[in-house]
Amino acid sequence: MQHASPDPAVSTPTDAKPVKKRAPALYAIIAAKLGKGLLLIGIAMGIYSLMGEDLRGEFERFLRWVKLDPEHEFFAALGEKLQAVTPSNIQWIASGTLLYGLLLLVESIGMTFRAFWAAWLAISETAFFIPIEVYELVRHFSPTVLAILVLNVVIVWYLVENRNRLFRHHHHHSS
Image 1: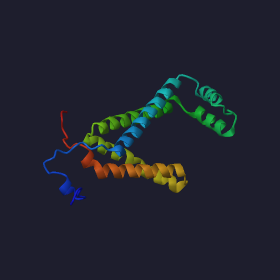
Image 2 (image 1 turned 135 degrees about the vertical axis):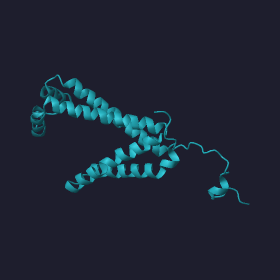
Image 3 (image 1 turned 90 degrees about the horizontal axis):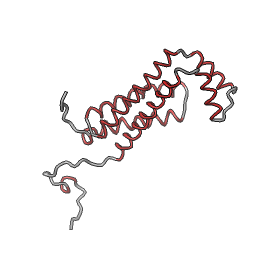
Image 4 (image 1 turned 120 degrees about the vertical axis):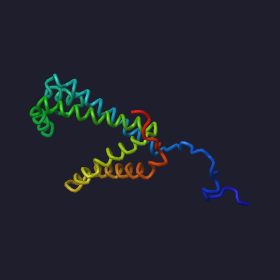
């Protein structure tokens, strides 16, 4: 008596409508990108709000708040670097951070609604960093960078592999 056939052709009737499958891996990717997006937007907002302040003073106040010695040589060097940062550089950094945060937000929302363009956006955005991470690893090995690299490769592979199953195809709704 054949109860549950392992053959998918037998177990699934052909006239069944495709059900939107739950995809925990996809939701994990969406959650990660959404979290990163919101974090970056927060950081950008923080940079914008500090832009009027004396950055070095703010930085030292922050270090005292996290109980680090502002005179410690690493932080002293970082403080020097911060002093060299011009408002226009900061503006660029903040704007870039904000735009990237917004991109991740759009990507997450698009993937939540299973939009096909969002799959490609996520694939390209994630793949974009892979060569940078490889370069960093070759220059200076870091287990953290390696972990990020592996994760990004897995995300790209997962999205490319499952894009047809997970994302809707109709391209133009309205323009």
